[in-house]
Length: 143
Image: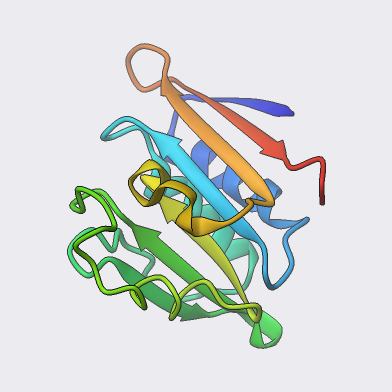
């Protein structure tokens, strides 16, 4: 496990960029944390490292976004915050995003229960007072 301490959005983005260095298509990254902890900021940093040059914003109201990274890398970014569970959702909701050719980042993954599969990386972002954050990045031992 890697632990980062951040006191700014730029530092949180750097932590995301560092985590992205080891990612490959098919990897699933679960991004956990309270509201306002910096989950999307972390994902933005990872996307920049993976070659996304356009805006990277929270997909809270659209559930998911797809980005084209450098060298043809596809990136999925999901935010399940506004869902109460997967029971009432179309079974194919996640299938369009969790593909073997894409690196997928999922904010609020607890909503999906076991439907996401095994993550390559689990990120937890915690408030540490003021603008400070503690960011733990844990790579799965199965990877």
